[in-house]
Length: 460
Image (cartoon, rainbow, N blue to C red):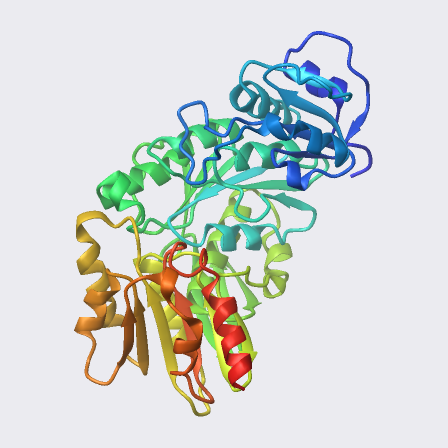
């Protein structure tokens, strides 16, 4: 896009702040002083979220304590709750830098964009599906997993006005959050990727999870479209619905076949069929691709234009990226885990063409499953056909370990923080393909996969 996304004066006007502000160009909006670069607007948020929001990573310090660092890094203005002494760049003072500042600016950003906006949520695969949609030419999408109470408004504030469409991912830490994020985003198309037993500890039932995910429709206009998987009810929404996935859905798979490491897929979009490739190929990526195609179809955009680009969409770090380390292939799927995504990871492993070696799964606890956590973990035993060995990590995975057939259990370790990658590396042999999967706190936070790769490199 030619020109800045904002000027300092435009930001002040959008937030209703009186006074004289310069027309200095703003090229980037961030709440993180470490990400500030020349031309940035720094939004100084409180370390304790306001607006009733909950953060898993609340800070003991407030953003305005880093105002000097933001200025030194090149910020041209900042949004603050009060004047900060010693700061020479313009300060736009609002009562609450989250609700009145960041959210206020996000509303102004959304109001000036007239193109299609796809807002999506789901229990698993949100970010992967977002990346598929973002392959549409000149699309703008949420960076990384910016899907919470600060990530969504930052996405809107940084979105390009000349984009062909916006793609905004929405997640939740508490009941009612998706509805609030959708009402801020005001999507023209709302997509639910899936409804799975995730956050059961907070929401209590699969039906409550369904209601939370379907609440993404609350931000739709009357002529908006809700895109749902086949079989998911949404009586709360009285407008148009497009379904995908099931045999009789408007968007569904006709056929797929492995071709090397990719999948060749034929899908029906209404009365037309379209062929495309997915690389790397995994069955659950077909579902995500169908969701993306259905959303683009609902937005009245050219589905064929997206389909030809799907094979160029890679897998994000921690979501199935694989690498060869000596004679062992490591699949890093450690970013997060729930019953549906773990089953999908095992299915993908089972589908591997092997020329020797074993299919090995390193599985960590699936958290936030509430009273049914034990049964969800033991239930994974039904997904292990074709898996040669399983190493279990965490107290909940002990239940699966105890249910494993003789000879399939490679070991169990209770605490992921004390798990030594080199001990696991000793269990792996030449030709093995190993997938690492579990909730974020099990492997991702502890950087287990990089440690395992280093241990395998030392062993080679």
